[in-house]
Length: 402
Image (cartoon, rainbow, N blue to C red; front, side, top):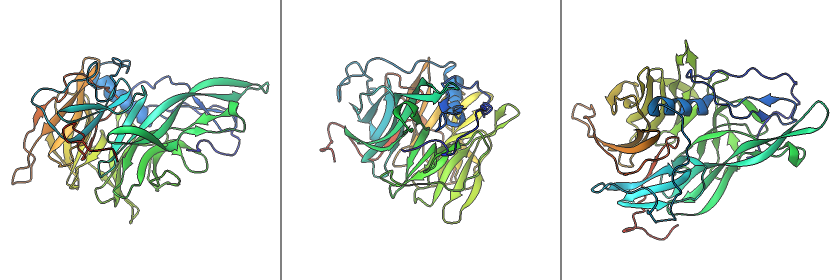
């Protein structure tokens, strides 16, 4: 990712700090810098505030995300354990201690050993797992005296690895090279989503020749070499988050963030790529859409005065057809490849539990109440949305990595 700010020098005046779209207090992350170092830019609130609110509402407080030291690959000792009697079809990837783990069948596998991995997404064939990893770099800005003030910045990198772990391929890197190393800077990157043809939708402020003012949905080519920006409406400075593809790749669903009278006015939008048209789906306060494999349903996180809950909507009308949870402490849905189950997170003290909801659809077309189990006996990272792939990596059935 050769990303970030406008190539034209900016005025020295600081842009007003944007207000969070969900009414939560903005995080205090250090501002990043403009390309020429003349102006700081406040951290975009869109994806971070959404995640912040979900964890605040569901878990009751923000917590450190580092859990116990992860075990070595394929060694569950010191790591999570699978609940006896629970079998997972395909492979669910989740976060623990900043590393990526997966559960398949009744077996566990540790896929990475980093401590900053998040934002998971499977390719549609279940062979490749994508994740965003952050690293610390040193950037700088010019002072009035002509000297450079250094600062630490978090740089995102979009990675691809196989369902079995192993070698990691960089698809898109967030480090922006300045006129000299001391003036490097970084962009933002959240929520990758894979289309059936390999295209990648991602929320970022990189726009190909520089940096935009807001984090919005853009489309990367499969190898990350090209980027385009569809004409999606957004409310500045809140931008977009949570892109998701329709099963046939003809449409992108995303969250258009907004704030109204101190409460969330974020909502799910469907963008028809061929027609370049947008349609609002469902009520306000919906985030984290997940499209069922047959395109019939949308699972989403609903934000209310009670907290956050997982619901299933009709993908055409946006009507809520089934409330998976009603506790105000659940979020981050992900469909199983068969479309008959949902994985989601719920509050577990200051951490999160991974849950599976199984349900069927009545002849009337209305989903039946779900049966819920917890496949892991141990907590997972609350800020990492699980991703469910079709390929099985159970030790009993695994084959060599592709």
